[in-house]
Image (cartoon, one colour):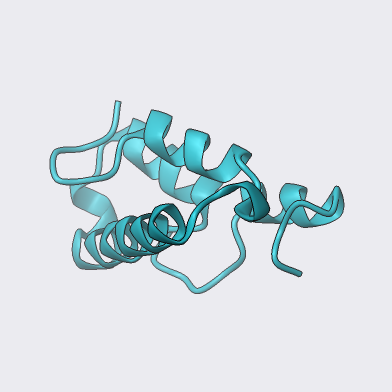
Length: 84
């Protein structure tokens, strides 16, 4: 379960698994806004105040207070579903 004020893991997974080519303009924009907001929340919240579950979720999604590609993005790119 994600921490209060953070995007749920279910929403993140659902968004990541659907290729951008199958999303409409508004869905892509919504995903981008949610992702940016969650990333900012991850950066603002110190790791010492995050639950263990949130720390693990941030690591998996690339929101571990770094600007690195997420494991999910790496997997999507490997199978040709990502932006790269």
